[in-house]
Length: 111
Image (tube, one colour):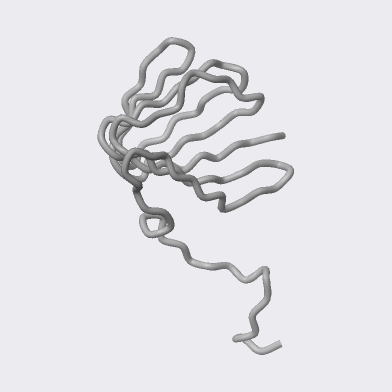
């Protein structure tokens, strides 16, 4: 095989900021990985958008790569900014509220 041959398994360099845009009044998502062991999904939230309180059966790691967000986990509030991350434990109620526009990567661990 030549060094330039391409197949489905070749790694691709991705720039998080350019993978999804903001949309006015909306939450936008783009799944990057969808495997039995977990998922990786990017989200962008317009100012004031959020996710109401819910639970998930799996641990979820949230990495903020643009903007600022208020995350509530089990009634405790955390403010995260670009470059920060937090673990949302399985089965714990959590909610998100955009403090201005923000983008995050959600890594769901299913095993």
